[in-house]
Each structure stands twice: as C-alpha cells, then as structure tokens.
Length: 160
Image (cartoon, rainbow, N blue to C red):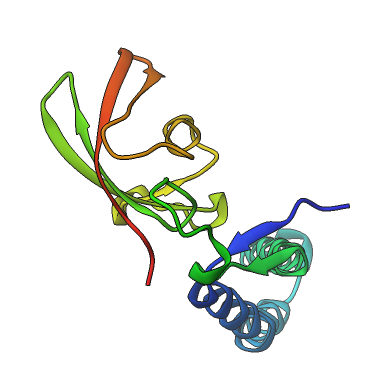
C-alpha cells in the first residue's frame, strides 16, 4: 500500500488542476506535435518526431506520478492538529542559527509541498524531523556538509 501523503487543501487543488491540464491540453498539444512531425515524411530520420515522442513520454510519466500522489493523498486541516505549543506539520517556526546568529522562518509541510525558495521545509528533512514535537526555547542540531548546526526555536505560529 502506498504511503499517505499529507497535503494542504490548496496544494491538493493545485495538483488536481495540473493533472487536468496535462490530461486535456498537454496531451492535445503533444498529439498535434506528433501529427505535425509525421507529416514531414520518413520517421526513421525525423528528429522532430523523436523529440515529440520523448515529450509525450515525459508528459505521461508526470501524469502517472500525479495520479499516484493524489490517490494516496489526504488533506490535512489545521483543526486536525493538537492544540498545544509544539511544532507540527503546518507550523511556522522562527529559528536562530546559533553558528551565524541569523534568524530563519520556515513552514513545515509534507515532502510533496516542500519548496525551500518559499521557506516551506519538509517534515522528512533532517531539520524538519528534528523540529517536530519541540517547543519554543528548545534547541535542535542537524548535520550538514559543513558540520553540525544548532538552531534555537524562537517562535512557533500555528496555522489558521
């Protein structure tokens, strides 16, 4: 059985919309490219045809991945989480990097929603795992390629 993937309602909608787009518009666009390439004649030496088939293969792989993900997905609501002062999935955590004395802010999310550029940290990452269940004032350590880094939890914001 597939592992449950926890998603926010918004992310679930985004994935469903992407899947719909790929199945309708994406497939239609690829079919047009393949038909156009076929019209150019000899398929054995037709680079456009090979490229279109490769693009179709990548599209179908993405569709299959999204279908698997959505089949095992469960929407997690803030009301599903304990109402205490600990770090859980969907918590936003303000950390102090004790080595560099810099503050960082992350929202803990599932691996499927992680996006470091948007400060969305996976609960399955080393830092995410270390933070789960901790409270304000506690410190956690993670090992990085440059050595061990210690973070102190300055604040925890619960999701709305």
